[in-house]
Amino acid sequence: MDQDAPWRQPGPAAWAESSARAVLQLMVESIAEIVGYEVAALSVVEGDQLVTLAYTGPEEHRAYLEQPDPVAIIEPVLARATHLGERLRFFESTPLEELEGHWVRIEQVPTDHPDAWQPDDGLLAVLTGDDGAVAGILSVDRPSSGRRPDAHQCSLLERYAAQAERAVLTLFDTRELLEQAAHAASARQLVRSASRPTLGSLVDVLRHTHGQLVASFDACGSWLHVFEPEGPGTSVARTDEGQHVEVPLTLLDEVAIAAPELWERQEPLLSASGRPGDPWGLGASVRGQLLGGGDHAVLGVALGVGDECVGFMALSRLPGQRDWSPVEIDSALQVGHDLGAALMTARALERERRLVADLQRVEDYRSQLVAMLSHELRTPLTVISGNLELLGEADLDPAARRHHEAMRRGTDRMGTVVDDLLLLARVSNPDHPLVALPLDVRRVGREVVALVDSTARAKGVELSLDEPDTPLVVLGDAVELDRLVGNLASNAVKYTGSGGRVAVRFRRAADEVVLTVSDTGIGISEEDQRELFRAFFRSTNPAALRESGTGLGLTTVATIAARHGGRIQVASRLGEGSTFTVSLPASSPVPTSVAPSTEESVQAS
Image (cartoon, rainbow, N blue to C red; front, side):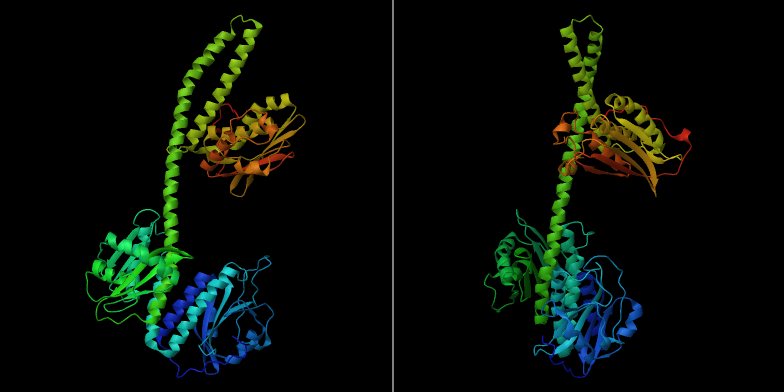
């Protein structure tokens, strides 16, 4: 639109009509919500004034904004605005003197983002008639993101501004069409609500959509069908009274042919007795097979997203009801887009839930298998270890002694693996709930450091413990937390060379107890950090692979932390060392005597 375009001069004002304002208010609220703005206003040209008909935003500005303004105030804005689309205009934060007393400056929470929305920024859409005359202005303010509009928001606003433009022009022409547009806007709002996460399945979405679609389009029934890659798909057909209607398989075959062509053409299916324009005969099949015959008027549209047709929607009217209006047909086509997106989301969520359930079953089976194998291995290992211990007391020659030591080390190694597998299976099992008791983690730290200190001294590694004087109490399992701290501390010593340092520190941070284990060891690459807490993962660093390990230690640590409502983080650079940080919810301090002691030895893998 050229900035010198004429301003539309309507006839006598009819904006006080409550139904008209209700439709516009619903439209403005929907646009603001969908596009992502907290404030939106729709104004129309009435003579030489710009009258605000619908507004959503802070109530303290409503009375001010609903006062008429001279049409001339918008001209300098359009003159300096940047074109973002056919209708969209954006102007940056320099205030205009001409707008003084006519423009509300709505404060925005400041951000440091380079595209941050400024209080004096403005984004509006110019609505014009077929003759190019300005019919109204749709403006938005205070973006939820705090940023200036991106391409997606501009595309959405352009799309809904086009709908607002059509609605305003319809209001200029006839009130009857206004009421029909209200039904269509209500239907679109319903379809958008069908994307709510509370609707757990595809069938739930279809059932939720039926009732208000029928009411909004004044229909006597609806049929919604969603295609599936395999099988006939999912259908819900009901009368306006909610009675279920069985959909014949032959009708599903017909719609599978017609719907993709309708979507590609972006055309509706309009069918009534004696009415042309249905080359597939689908309308006649709907009337005959779904509606029991009769001269019903059928409006059908394909449902889809992008280039993909995902389903079909059909609405019907009884003989003698009015024909489908152009506004209703256009709205139905738009519903095809909105509902198509909602159904795609619902279908994806349903598949995701099935996948999660399948993965959970696999995980449960894996945990049970690991636990069973570990238990089955423990008994023969105990027998082997006992016999090796007896054999070690015998008078063996040097060669036999070497073989005996090798078998003993292998048995000890296998015992460590079995213990790690059993612990991981136990802490990963949802049927084994956490028995949480008050525990001062400082005691855990002291016992672990005392246990690991001899290994650190033998390697020439300096091991230190830093803790506050006051108790650091968490609710947890003493054995599991002992293993958590022990795995981190012993791993740090294992991967730190002679002359290095390992520091174990406990502290209180707000409502959390924080454990950090830092070392000056070999470090961990960024690639390895992404896989670090996956079961059986071993480092790709040759220096790390020279040390024995099962790849279960850090997996166990992460699982224990999660079981205790905590989290674990790692910061590391290859060759410079690593810092592991575990944060656990803090509990109120208790006397030291209450905290249970940890007795199980720490075996890091």
